[in-house]
Length: 148
Image 1: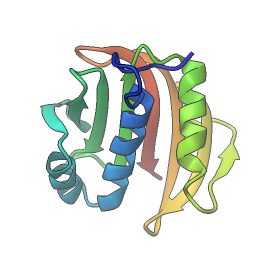
Image 2: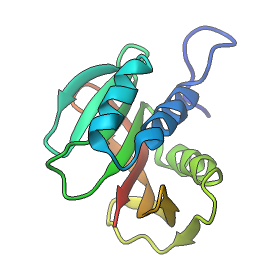
Image 3: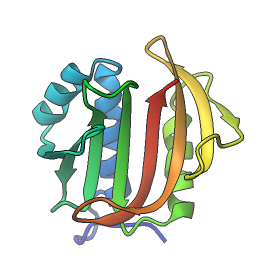
């Protein structure tokens, strides 16, 4: 089962999430540039949680995040409303398939369902499929990438 938008033929919420992740990647690891890129791409800034700036689309059913400048690590994240952990693993697999040299590893984060290591824009990163969590105004699973 895939998380879908309401109208037939519309992009799935997972597709919107993937696009948000890719938008963040365009500016990675520059968190200030990522903030500008997200806003310029039509993502609505919602809040800063300390580690991440969260942006939304589709009535807050899709979240994308960029790390704040105060975070020790650079990163990108997405979460999709009502996305299951298994769906997040599939979404992460789609994302990492587009990153040359990404390799699966044993999860190092206790919350990761699956994890990969890769180099993105010259920076070594961990990419993990994260289980269902609460994101202020929505609940769902997602994908998190952070520099090592």
